[in-house]
Length: 72
Image (cartoon, rainbow, N blue to C red; front, side):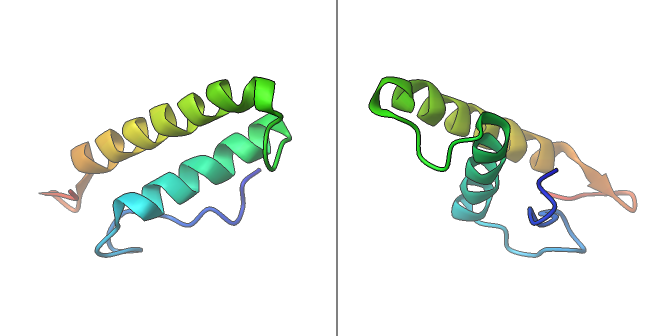
């Protein structure tokens, strides 16, 4: 699942932007929901999920330690 989502932590990626994190979150929500773009009645839930996953992803990346050093 979500095989094309790229690893966003060093040393696999440097200088990860908020846009990179949001793009990964969007791709994940699309995969899980089965919608590329949700219908109007699902748009709020879809967008909220993307934002929550992006926040969680950013928090994860900020707290990871890679080879004894902080990744974020």
